[in-house]
Amino acid sequence: MGNSQMNQLQQEKGKMTGKIKRSIGIKTKFLLGVILALIISPTIAAFINRMVQQLDDAMGDLVTGEMSLVVATVINLVVVSGLILILLEVIVIKPLRRAGTTLRLISEQLNLTERVEVKAGDEIGEMMADLNAFLDTINDSITEIQTASRSVAKASVQIGEASSETSVAAAEVAKTIEDIARGADDQARETEHSVN
Picture 1 (cartoon, rainbow, N blue to C red):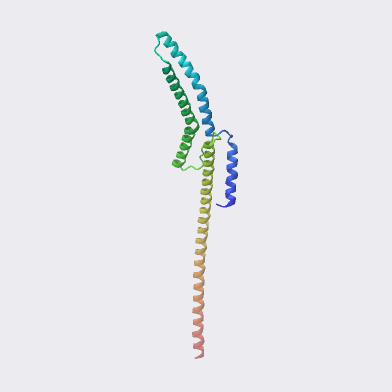
Picture 2: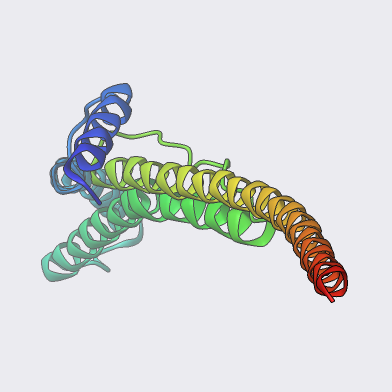
């Protein structure tokens, strides 16, 4: 690939990524999600501990301090893990599934005009924009190959026609040479006959 083609691809990529709204990266999104979960989970744990404490007060001393700590820890783990799984699904898995579905459609239908929908400006969004640029390059290359193939086929037909015309002309030249040789031979005989 020449420098001009590389520059053109970089410019097109710049245009495509310019269309994508810039957003925070995946690491930052997960970090913010974990921080949010850590802020929310103690509140939820405290609420549930109060409910357990009220239940404990109503039924007698069933729950000890250690049990309350275990319940709070389990609640924190469940909230943080749940939020991380939701973030993973929304930020990573869903866009990758969408890209996979589009690529499967492209491979099954051989339709290189289909594109992956780019919804985010994070690393996955950039990867999908790059994938679209790659598909554009492949589509353009195939179009150029088809155009060149048609030109070669047309030139081949023209060469075949020219070859045919050349064969006809060569046959006529050969016939003319043969006629001239026959005429020269006849003239030589007549000259020899008249001299005798």
